[in-house]
Image (cartoon, rainbow, N blue to C red):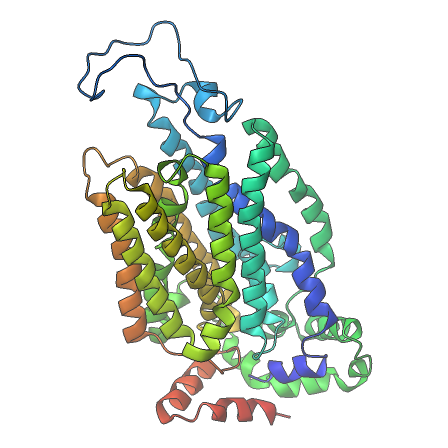
Length: 466
């Protein structure tokens, strides 16, 4: 695990890392808009029927002949009013959301494979490749803080969506507003250096050295361009390069026993995205002012993510993640079982669950990178992102079942985070204080050091590798 020493020679954490976070600011702000925009672009707004029936499900009805009348006081146009997604066609709304998530599922899986075979930076700073680049260019001590900052930016994007939707009440205008900036992001991201760690491990040490020199210059350590030579790099990373050969396929995640358990349990952790979307896409059932609710959700998420670095340093990765997963599951269970009329109580537990998920996702962004060696990190990230997208594909379909299977929603939404928290606590290791692993052998060394209680042994070995 000598790369951390190379990174320290290149300036550790400095101006380059700050510019990297700044570059990822815009995509991190806009990604939540695409994931949560359904709350506004597909909001229902059918006017209530005239009459005094107390139970409209039992009242006499007849097919619509003259079209539908919509309340346009909140939104001038939505998917629902545009294509009459009401009554017999209301099932098309969640199906549309499921198809959108299917596209993300295919994209995240393909992007994970491509970014492990080709350049991370050339593929752009997406939520998979962007966070991986950030982690691999950050020192061990600053990793949790850096990912917490990125998570807080994501929270700001959730708050910004509420304000933007309040300003733009037409779904087409809102969609353009959150989509067109990605053309600028495509141009901005080209300056990002490739992961030197990944280049070295995959047999491209000369290119890795060039990227280290580039980062050293940006960080103001120009003398490092002389001390960091190809001979030093090859001597330092010789063992890691040899061990990483042949470990590039997604099948390695299941063929290697240590990685198999980690991948299976982390897949269950990522599948709780189903529960997350079941909560955050339910704004219309929590209150009338969905704009304020969106800002409130974003604010709670920001507060939760901002304390994640402290929680990780105090409780560790595993305990923090498991405990907040369990709390999020219990919050959702109460929220779904409380009667619809008790909106205040449902709101309290919804906000609590949203805050817990904020801590969970910030913790996961740090923890998942520390569980896999460099040669397989992006492959694992792509696979786990695909699992999460599969959960988001299933979620809209689950939300179609309350009338036929009323207990399915609370059971599924609460069971996923609670079950994954128990398995994580029982079977996955604590990674706090360990450098980012480069090889399978590094993972074995971490396991041995944790078993003997000598966590500093791995760190000392790394710092004296020259």
